[in-house]
Image 1 (cartoon, rainbow, N blue to C red):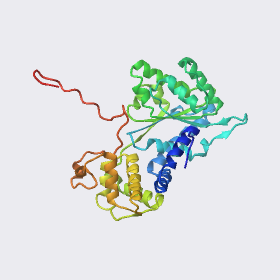
Image 2 (tube, rainbow, N blue to C red; image 1 turned 180 degrees about the vertical axis):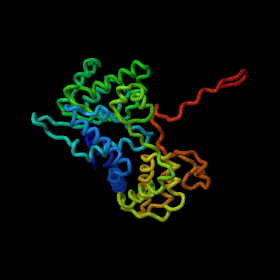
Image 3 (cartoon, helix red, strand yellow; image 1 turned 90 degrees about the vertical axis):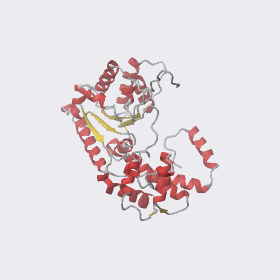
Length: 356
């Protein structure tokens, strides 16, 4: 069992659950963990690596006149478009970001990765960052005192890159123009520290771009990478993803169903979101394993889609004849609270004599 950086108490609790499970269930769980750990390469990998390379070139030229344009990178895409895994893979495979022990015996951490806290206040960003750096924070420490401490610890731990995922929370939790500008000013100061170079990667969904578009200085110090949706033009890519996960990662066989409109159904079911497509493929693999089979069929995808979307048999995109007329993107995981892409409907106006 892989435990990552879980505390001892969590490992103990999970171990008790494992002890209660049949060996067959544990084998499937461990096998799926191994399958899910694989990275699925796409054309986006090279695009992101090129942008990170520019930021590194800017970094090493920091004291000799670097390009200010490459101090901040915005990575923006819809939920389940694969932003987080894309960034994590790029940094994990780059030797520049490997941890090491510096000349003072301090554990250096070239990259600090964190999620945008909720609520995403400036104080909470600094507090969460300090916690990630292993520095205890007093609960009553004010914003004006915690940020200098955060910057000091960034220097001490040799942090050069900061990645904040779900960074759109900084916009949603700071609604006034004054509060949003305060966030902008803090981030600008972070990447402009005269005695320590910091490069910042902000990842999230819309309206994250408001942080950039509303400030000329932020615009001049940043670049943007948008992760668009997959379309029918990417049908061959989808086939490749299915073959890669099923035959190489899972080491299973594929039934003959990838021809015709199957990849188009996949794209339609997942709303073109790369992350949802990958998750659907892996869920189809798990469905196959649970049935004791070693051949992944179209029926496994239909069952996986039904589980993800909660659809009725008549509205299953993988079995319905009129699948084009069904709702796009129903296989996306239900959005987190506050992350719904569609605005809530306004309450119906009640006319005289009507009941609510």
